[in-house]
Length: 446
Ligand code: SUG
Image (cartoon, rainbow, N blue to C red):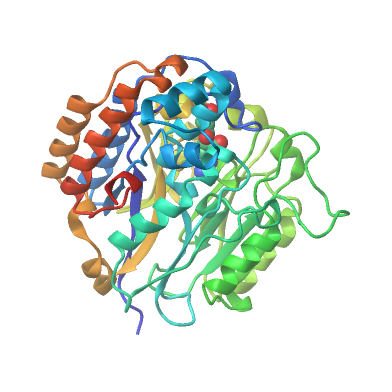
């Protein structure tokens, strides 16, 4: 019997140290907005508004908390000594880039938090989680430990949920989580096809690879996650990203493709071997028909796709078809805006478009889909999670008030060494773990 299941979206709440440090080579927005003054308060409120709007439409919406930043344990591990104020002063003097890295609020992009396989797909019938090691970027490689604790605090019932450690944190097993993973299915509660997209083959120097920007995900990492989750060959498709799009700024596959249900919405240049990817998916969808919505470069040139983040939209089931939740930038770029108007008029799976303003995050290369981690849950599993993180009217009000009382409305690089900022962050996070009912997940609380 097929169980009833839903797709829940867990958004990262933007942290109080949100700033523009230009940390991500290969991510065009991150590099081009370096040193702008950020507004962490506005960033967090924009994210909360998106969560609330989707919860109001009836989607199951959860919240994942920000991480403790600046992260003093990492600075101490790098040899900075003394009191906390001295550690901050020392790193600011010795190497401000290190301070920026350990201060990044990058854990907000929870599409990179983990790869998740629903219980309908896995050998032991549990939902499997593997936090992403994010080894390609130092500032992101320090996320997975706390991410793992957060996921275990929310999905704690071992009868339903299985948690793995992140893969070995080296480039051979570079893993960026759900940003490079899409699940296609007829119904959420039925076994689906898990599409893992990688940028490079680590153990084969001859395989195609980008020339300019790094490929963050390896085939070997994707295969390891699939093994850990107990997925069978019948449900697996591994596809290589087109190296040329990585070199054009597509640092994750979710910047160029998104899937939901039987629908794959993608740019014609997304994959190295498009036809094989489609035929592999069709073969494994078992009876269900794939609806491939292929966007041509003529309609939307690659650079417009990257600048607008058209494909970093959330593709969600809706009563009359599917809703595409796009970032505001899609309405600012003529080719993309025109394309969207035509898309909803056509007779396809996508029947409506809704625009969300997540500009603060977008300036760091994080659109609506980067901000969320999808977890398919059947009724029993949904019942078993920690409900303190599920968005409701009252949680929205509490979190909005919490942001308004703790967050600054301006943050620049030079503010990161301010010991007062560290104290503000800790006070805020201590209160947040109470609001969300998560227990002691942060290093400073242990
Ligand atoms: O890893 N940006 C993030 C954006 C992640 C987007 N996620 C998905 N596509 N799923 C990254 O490149 C920039 C931080 C800075 O430059 O300050 C940053 O980390």
